[in-house]
Image (cartoon, rainbow, N blue to C red; front, top):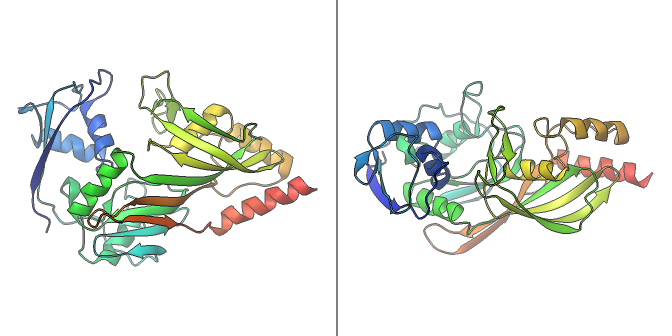
Length: 318
């Protein structure tokens, strides 16, 4: 069982439009917002030594203290689900997540998730961040996004990896097929992202009131009605690539949330209908959290991604 521990840090910049629980969710991406709210309500998270509400707005100079309680047993049930593991040692593992696999159990997806599979695979080697013994999901991929995902096996690895994510020292490269023919050969998208004001399951580009988000890209191949891109994430906001390219007018092929109209048009023009959003976390590079050595991984493209390229290429050649 993972023992309890504490840590503290000072807020560097005032965030008058952001809640404390949202701010901490960004700093500790492996911990759910619900868990953070529970820790605040239980007095395990304090600001300047005082208990505080989740709605508190962080101010520069404030000292935030976080007490991580001893982890209780995992609530999810271990399941023997095959995993495509690229690398594994005593501290972490990197896997190629299959499209359609949900990362965390949630309402409607209580089982058959990546966490269920990892609980079975890790057999007790679990991180306890957030107060629940579970594999350390340091970052997430959407259900329909495939590719590289790193998982921590212990708290030391978990926190060191989370620090690299929040400090933007990792390298995350994605492959995406988007609707429309992107004009520029390369470019950058710097547009803040926040929760959509009315569609709470969606994110949207804002006028600067959201979280800073930065994506750079280059074109790999153009088709009739679509473009194959390579995208580098400099920040890690929810749905970042999907929202940024929708903002440019080029939503991800197969994205039912952010590109319904353009995808309908693509099907009419090409006859190709994607089975999911064509987004693949291709490459991931980071420092080993305990050994300091740089590690670089590449996840092979799934069959449906290759089929999409072949189909669009064939239409373009006719």
